[in-house]
Length: 174
Image 1 (tube, rainbow, N blue to C red):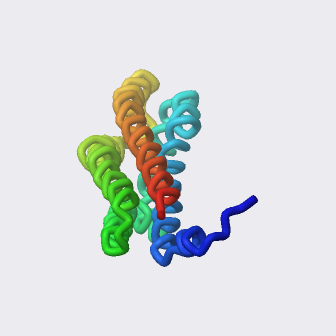
Image 2: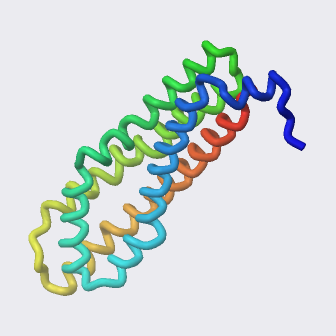
């Protein structure tokens, strides 16, 4: 039997919950973005001809700078910080801690590797003019793909923990 006490009904309809739900959606979008690169996109490119992989990655790197991706990538830690602040105001300490930690982890584990490693690798790859001779293309792709994937795995794991912390925060409303 479901608990329909006034306290339980108030917590289910907590006014700060929609903001936490939006935080969960954005954290999930970013986890899914990094995860898809990890488990399919890069493996597919690794299996392709290196000249094709380089050209395809150049196009994907150019296309990711768009109006749909930018708010999720840059807005996730802002939204998490705002949701944490609202939770503090609403005396939801456990929720606030989860959301604040999620925001901090996103900045350190997803954004910093992106700006310090993945973007510089992308910018270097953008300078290549394909087609290259097969040996040069293979060497260039391998030199790019291996570190890019290693650091994308860092971003993926961090974003997974961000998603988990955000979910934990959401279910912690009292």
